[in-house]
Length: 268
Length: 268
Image 1: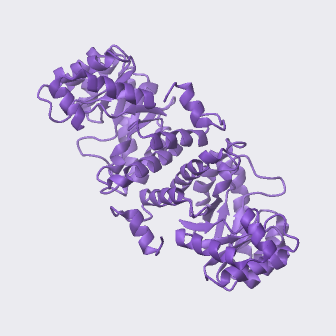
Image 2: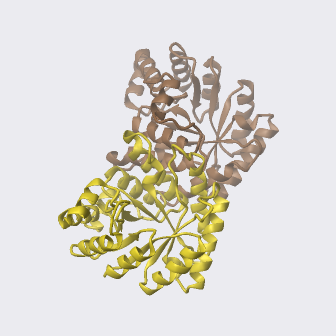
Image 3: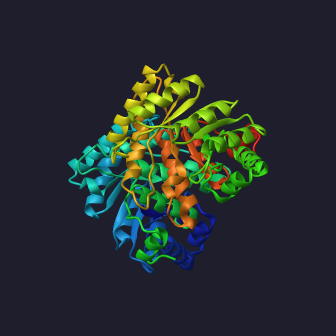
């Protein structure tokens, strides 16, 4: 699975502090630790409370670039912050995210094209997140069609069927799994699929969060999930994902398959 | 999930010893521990080396009956041993198992009818286990049709799509998941689905067995699995199964959902 580390996000206290103090060492450390744990890319989000989000995004992206040239997912709802992040990123980038609103697609897809970025497309629009898989697929189809119109390669598109917290939206879980499975039929080649994984356990008891995350990621991988924004440093979660991919034959069996996977990627 | 505890099986050394010495205490203890851990039923198998399997099956069933009236799955390939087990069982019983061979169906379905037993139907026949889901479904359909002919309620039938060890049959895993999903469309009401779960990790390194089992059970539950013959005393596995059922909305969300589940069943 393509793992996007979720930790460089201003909603975490240590990141908010580091942003405030312009403390690069914290950001360097978070980047290195997530990569060592198995992240294939890093999410970058200035968080909710940044006074100058554009400048903060640039600072975060430049700081990360000092220690790695891994892919960065520029995670913001603001167009100027998005462009600042994409522009500062010397490595491969991901637009995180567009949704099915016309203005989002019109404004952000040309940016993705300009910066040769991959795109995360959320199956939601001004009316919110559809309750069922059919509604999600309709919005996914709209995003796919819009990417095609903008000359974007569909294999660069990650459809995110938007998992909600199981504690308040239990009925959505199986709809998301169905939407992942059926997204694969929207185009040929198919779009990729992604989830903001930790959202499923948001608000659940701390002691159950990792269990909920790893159980859900196993299910989602069996439905065809290609990527997740997740806690790469949760070793139990990473091992569940590796095992799920083994069972789905995305990695060849070896007795020491987890060791083999980690060794092949030079992970700790 | 309907959990059938796998431990009373002569292939385990302590059970083989207990059978040899007619040591009921070991059997009582295994029955009680599995039930305390969450088993809804117990599998009973005399193992490969029993000299007098019929008598041994009777002894095992009677011994278990001294401490519980839980459902017993009489697990044997021999018809006389099956009948001995069903006859000795005063509680609800399960015929474990029939397959799609004509003689098996002809001989065992009347027995199931006579003893009012549920039935586990393996999707295999004289030619072996089909490689793909389509082949498995064909055999499942044959079993469903034969049950109907024998006047057996299809909701008493558990289709077992036969998971093989991932270390030698990796390609089968996703076919089994697909067969589970599609078995639900074979009749209305649908047959139930079951797996001999531990088989998936048979031959894998000991340190990965539980991880493989719990990752696979999560996937299988998302495909619609209703029951499993499994290690009920593996707490990580039980918690994965409970969480998977929560995510599939088979249990209503509660913050302390695992505690609530265990409390509702008076488990330890």
